[in-house]
Length: 141
View 1 (cartoon, one colour):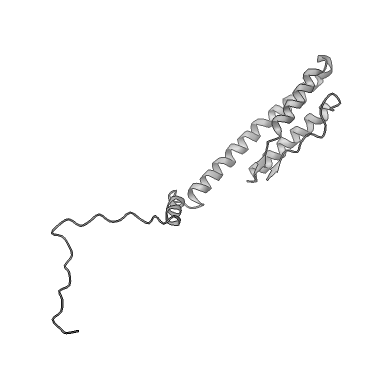
View 2 (cartoon, helix red, strand yellow):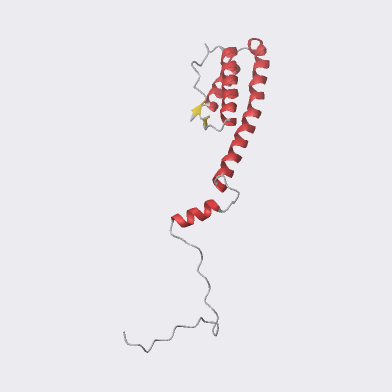
């Protein structure tokens, strides 16, 4: 599983332009991984974004105004990532359902067979339509 690496630094000394560029690049790489079918771990993403936002809010407005474009690029990287993850989820779900086959019930049938549930038994034949039983032979055995 691949993931977005944690931010190397945080707090008041954080180089915001560099941190925003690095996170945007990480999101773009995560999008590529998702498109390639790799599992990705975005568990640190919320913490990184929270750290960046807190640092930006703590700085004077005039010093962070130049970050508007890098922030817009970061936000713009989220939609393609979300689309790639959604498409990956659909592909995985389809693969689990059909196991790569055209029959959507094949996975369910294999699971039922694995747990010992075979096909449903045939209903009993109606009276009068029972098959003829062999008659005993008169020959000694």
